[in-house]
Length: 289
Image (cartoon, rainbow, N blue to C red; front, side, top):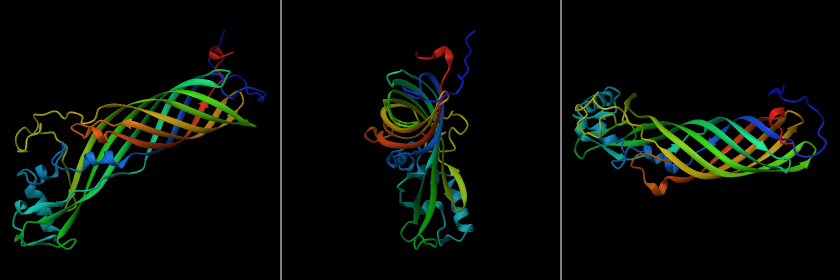
């Protein structure tokens, strides 16, 4: 009976370290592209706008009162007298990426791989509030108040690639991959902070400006979507004979990240991943020889 168990380890004599079917786990650091983070700026051309929430009767009074209680305002009698002076330049925080995959390697060193990865990203920035002319003064930063803004999203990456391995000597190999990427983005939250309190600006009002209208009547529709692109990978592999390999690698993606009403020219951008991957090889039923 054939068993789906790794074969007994042995000394490496010839050929490549991976042969036949392997399963893999990976973990790494994802460096996203900041221009895609600008989806979360909160400007009027985005689905989630700062002004709509800040100037609504539902939330404007609370925000104005918080600023007043914290001593940020003098002589400003209403939230109607506050404006956004400057919108943020958003950036992504460095984040993790974890995943699982399968691959098949041939005795020639060629092979293919299919990988599934997950990451959660946080976009962050600050916008400036100021007072309308003649409406009093702000006391935080000269005539302005700094207000944090953040968006959280999750991404699932599906990578399919052709792989080629090169023997470097000893138990070391170099691997080069080239392939396609499919990804799905889900926007999970979009918040601003006013006077120390957090407020969601995620559009759950069906696009209405009167935020009393429709509250609880509209189901949130994900503002992300499906994107495609390509990637290349270089990895240094340490072969564990009869068991698999440990890889230290770098991937560069030129891939599309899709958001609702987002500028399509900014949808494609370079992104980078540095990872460690463990390949478990030697399943006798699927051996390539």
